[in-house]
View 1: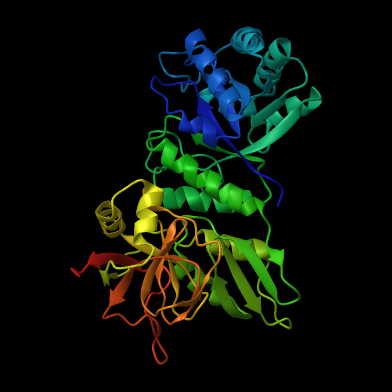
View 2 (view 1 turned 45 degrees about the vertical axis):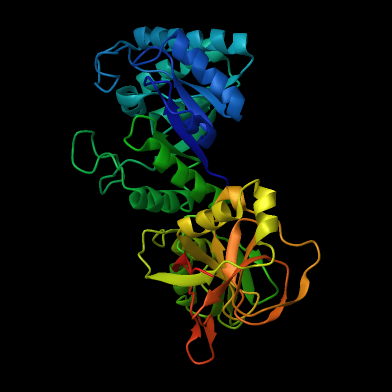
Length: 429
């Protein structure tokens, strides 16, 4: 798919979270019409520079009282001057900072009014060009007067969709104030992201910086876009490897992929899903495979909690403590304090990679693996922990021994399934 970028309306609220700038590809900076002043614009430009975010202007009707969300009866020549003044203020500050402004997106009521009226659309475009020049892209609706005016002026144009807004049957946005207009549910934002980004009708998706929970929504949308940007990688003639987003439940991902027609098996690794299929009946298009994977429920699924009793007698426990600069007792306390998730299963039947350990006790695997690790040894390797199901070679740091636990049964298979929740409980030696 063509790359789809995340744009966020910013510089509008006091105490705005810096994380939004790190998540956004494009920052639409309020420049005085509906919100913002010189101080907020300077801060926004500084954060764009810090995080490598592309800075753009977010002009509006000159209506701070209504936050630019009320349609006003403004003559086109007056509107052009207002847009030019707002973009010009940002341009002056951007030159001081050395951060270029390369796009502009109308805000609120002006966004919709300009897209319906050719005269207002020309006024907006003319005001932008007057302040920012012609090396600029207009961000707006997929079709309408605004795109026509931008292209007539020789400007770039980016078609926009909304991850955090509901739509009517005709595809238009539900007016603010009506039920379903503003979406704060992560799963809805995720579905919007996948549907729009894979549909070929948008170039950029918006999350509004003033939406409740904007950081959580933006983080999920950015993760989805980053994952969708990486197409499935063919593995021969009968397999695909797909990037597996952090938030997707591993067990449900395997179920969803295995259920696709033609799929023989789906194998989950730390960061990928490998889909094996009958070459005579390949699965549906890679875009649909990705779509189904990424709309699978996230880790809110409540798997049963498995408790594993451990005697902390591992021969590497003191080394892990020394590496962490902690006492052995503190390493044990931190290892047992966390609830872990099964991230993937391998390299032996029933060997579950559990994550993540407390960063303070993460420890690199041994430079030279042991030729034999006893069955049920509990180890740490990097940010993962796990239990050896059988005696085998291995390079994990051994910190203890699991008691009364069967990691793999030939009849039932692995005890620790993908997504399972695990807690370690200390048993006195």
